[in-house]
Amino acid sequence: MHREFDGWSYSAIFAPENEPTFGLSYYLEGGSAPDLAEVVIEGESHDLGLTYDVENRGTYETTLILDPGCHRYYFRLIDSNGDEHLYPTTGTLGAGVQSDCALYQTP
Image 1 (cartoon, rainbow, N blue to C red):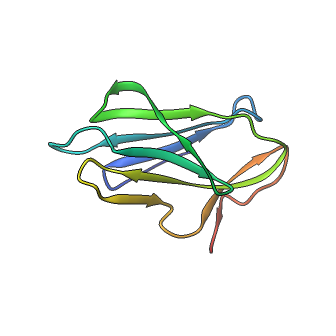
Image 2 (image 1 turned 90 degrees about the vertical axis):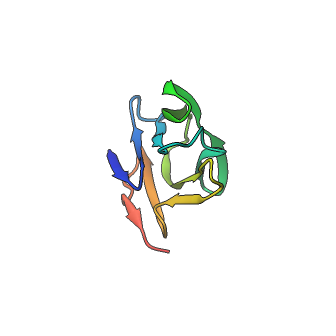
Image 3 (image 1 turned 30 degrees about the horizontal axis):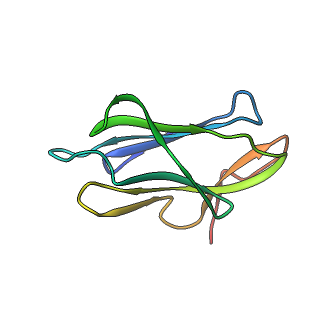
């Protein structure tokens, strides 16, 4: 799954299924690295580290081990201007590990 919006994009890769990689690509014209890039799963924050390119134009990822079930998550980024960005802006995305899980859930 891959989506783009407002100067950054996100993805979640489920291979192997119980160890998904969550990531986002970030670019801010004339800016620098984001102050914060994280995925929040079931209310717990997980930092995303730079894996490709350079800080102000790069991909930030983390790979996690998740128990079976449906896990609700969203991405949170604070850019180098101090502006907060959430995706989705309302609701959550779903990560199903050996379980059915709606891709998007409204609040």
